Length: 196
Image (tube, rainbow, N blue to C red):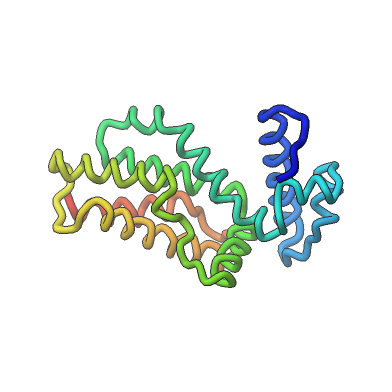
């Protein structure tokens, strides 16, 4: 990346603005036929500025994961106010799905398309902080015997994400025609209760 003379805050503000404008363009154009020029015009930036932050539209779409992770990490203090590990896990997924719902099925569908095109089926990699946070909550739930399972915390976390991914994928296919957060909460709650 070339050196630019501005603050870290300006860097992240501009990068987030590009992401937000891309999301807005995709929400307003369900076919997803947007160009880098469209993003530049909406963001009030030049093409060279766009390429300073991102390599392609796919790169912008893939950065939605960072946005979701940031939201979850910034919400950890409120998550930890929940009385049980199960409720903490459910609240974490609620935050995730609220963020996904705000982005809309268009951008999330494009992210799934990007992942499939790149033969990367891991939409929420296990090296992400939010994923590790869920593992730690499930580990605590197992240690305190709030949950009982022959699976370890990592395996339970994978199962939770498989389930959540299925609900999210269905939400995208149905073009957001149901409340993603409520439906995912219901499914995850049922799943986690099977271990209590």
